Image (cartoon, rainbow, N blue to C red; front, side, top):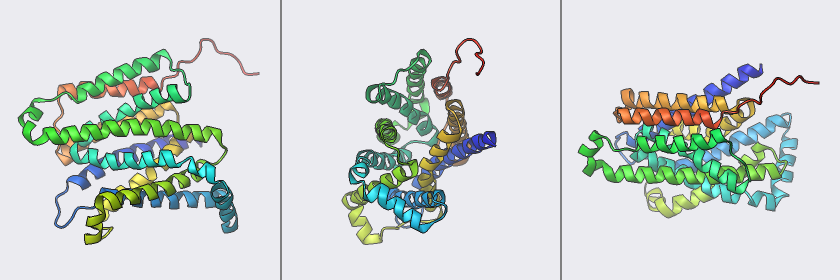
Length: 325
């Protein structure tokens, strides 16, 4: 049963990661009549959906009792304001990160984005060392060097990019800066969140409700500051269609899927999922979206990134085969 859950969670992670990137990219480049949906509002709606999903999970864990659900939410959130406030910092960073991903995929093809975004492994490792005092092994340090080399190859300008330099250089730079900033924010927020989870005994679903609450507030502030005029003119849900809702739902489920993978899978399988997602994104970006022409340098970089992903999660077993008592 556990093996089935392991591979089921792995398959769901591959599907969620790949489909989110591709649908988000497609939704930001699809030419339609009327105004395009606002990414700032999509981030807010995704946070609200995440809160609803986590409340349902807490309801299930409390044996489907509304009274027990109300008591848990009251005791764990309202009665512990300082514990709840600790989530404001990572929540604000996650909100920034989610908005940056829309910017990145508006300016980069899905394949380049997927590979470059794996730099979050590097930032997470560095923040883990500095904030949690973790020690990295030889294989992990080697994987980080390979990872940086691979991403550098992926970002190496190709002949086609040189031809369209005047048209695409600006947007490519904006997309790259958005991805790099998202990598740093993802690394810091992820390690900060891990630190909080280790210091308290609250469930990951309660913590995600707290994250979603602050994320909604920060997201609404972003909507008001950056898109307030457009919202007042065309409405909060301007440009929303079936594809937009698919993107929002996939983004809302992302954190829950990762939580399931952490529970049932291991680092090797997570690396395998990342590699499959990169390959699928590259193929679909080339054949379906037709916004990406792979080069030999890109393939070399992608292979290095995939190798680094596996190597970082590699855990060499100690010599010998000790028997259990």
